[in-house]
Length: 103
Image (tube, rainbow, N blue to C red; front, side, top):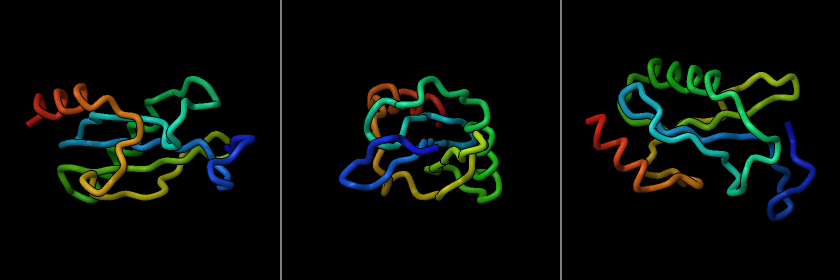
């Protein structure tokens, strides 16, 4: 799905970044630095895909970017080490608290 606008002339789609720690999502935010222009999103499919990616990669800490296609399905765009990922609009105190509880 694409937005009508663009950021710095780059067309934006519906994309979310999730941060996982040991199989649990500790953050999930709209990627583009604004509120999601498409409205509320059903998080269960995003969580399932992100957890599957982490399970397949067998790593404890992972950033996962997911994008929604025109048919409303979600696809994995990329994965990475969260320490090198922009954390989008996450609430840092909440994130660190969740991460501390999961150790």
